[in-house]
Picture 1: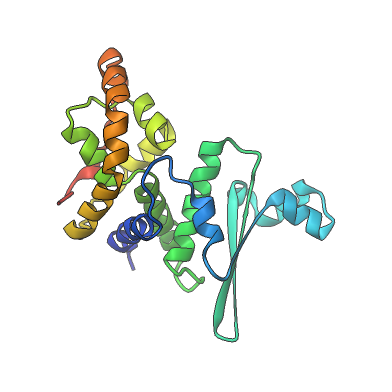
Picture 2: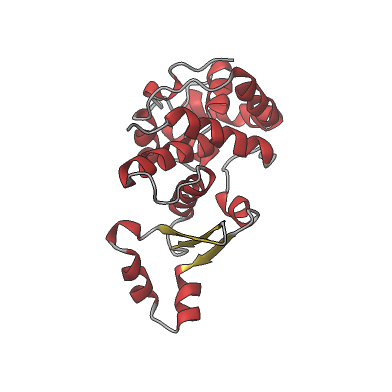
Length: 219
């Protein structure tokens, strides 16, 4: 069994489209809070509710889940999710962690798939949500030489996030969906061009390399 990267990427763009996201950085928290059957709490809030030390709560989720964790329960045919996250992390890390957890929920992960497949699909969703390829394509088409710093200021994703993007496998998303997302970002892109044009021409170091992330992109 292989991860369904195309479905993950497509659902990320559909999420942007249906939530009328028109600018970056994308904040997953408001999206999560508006999904029926999803409760979002910080580790600190959970600790307060349980009368426990915050560190004890974090330890409950395990060493791999120190940024965010989603638990799922199914009762009476209804699926409910509890998303907990570490609010003391830098905002870019919280953004990335919650985007991943949002991916698990949008993709309908309920524990039936192997953990590695669930995680790979959720990470793919997160990257396409936070750094939409239609946005990157529009920036590239403008002739901008995009630095890592410029990409970070636009999307909130810096070196680590970019290195993960380069490892994303090629996906073929419906061109109509690509165009819809591009069009909703277009006013934002136009407003941002002048600053980024200045920044990219005055700092050509660490130019962003998007690797396979943009391979197979179609409109």
